[in-house]
Amino acid sequence: ATPMATMVGSTLSAKNGVLYKGADVLEKARGIDTVVFDKTGTLTHGDMRLTDVVPVDEAVETDGGEPSGARRSSSDPGSDGGAPAADGGVLEEADEPTPDEDLLLSVAASAESGSEHPLAQAIVAGAEERGVDLENPTEFENVPGHGIRATVPEGEVLVGNRKLMADNGVDPAPVEATMERLEREGKTAMLVALDGELLGVVATADTVRDSAKETVAELQDRGYDVMMLTGDNERTGRAIGDQLGMDPDDVHAEVLPEDKADEIDAIQADGSRAIMVGDGVNDAPALTTAHVGVAIGSGTDVAIESADITLMRDDPADVLKAMRVANATISKVR
Ligand code: ADP
Ligand code: MG
Image (cartoon, rainbow, N blue to C red; front, side):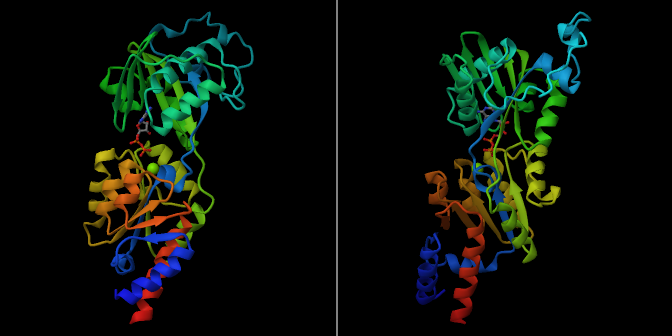
């Protein structure tokens, strides 16, 4: 682009809350055929809330999970013909937890109080709202892309996905049906274990940004390939993708933080040129690898530093605006 073209583009874009970095950004944004969105914090608001606390016994009762060994006896008080928990353990208005829920939530939240991850913050905030007592962990370890391990007064706690449990010899079979139910609802479901024994499941939900659906639709209408990249579970990713009108095959889930850039390389391997839109530390390498990197304005500093374009209003629809500006600017010069 000529300096004039850049100036025109920048002037228009400043009004629209879209900031460009560098003189060649508008030029680069012209040849795009693929738009890849991070899920959490980009297509969604990223303000996760704790929605479900399901102890293992309740999971087996409510969702028919596979009981593990002698866990249930025929005199189980939960199967005396009384009405089952109609809400499936969903804590809508921060109900007071039952003793099982209290233990599950207290160890999970105490362990997570060592983490800065948005999922961790949602679990801690949810526990506090429900009046659950928390302790600081004496030991804490992040397992990126999988969860955490921490030592709290009750013992050694694991909170995370199936892979974390598998790597630590914990069998999630009793709560598998519960996990799948929650994931089909688009929630992030996490397993909790104490001293190698499964305690249950906690789940968080996030909300899709208002303009995300229409943005995906308009990009698709204009012939762009639209994809989602997420570290979250496949079923959760597809449920959110479905809400946004995306094809299941265009949802790339369970991508480890260090693999996001490789995923962009793979997408661009056939000569495609991708815009990657993201907000997180995890997204930074992918923003650099993509033909054009776009950061959400409220995202992390490292994402903004790695990006060519920043959307100051956190609005995915501004991706369309940025591309329109790029195309208009170029054609004006030609
Ligand atoms: P995202 O791309 O959504 O930021 P991450 O790569 O950070 O995802 O995490 C992927 C998955 O690992 C999460 O969906 C969750 O199952 C698990 N996980 C990561 N961090 C935590 C944590 N602090 N507590 C529980 N689970 C976690
Ligand atoms: Mg994100």
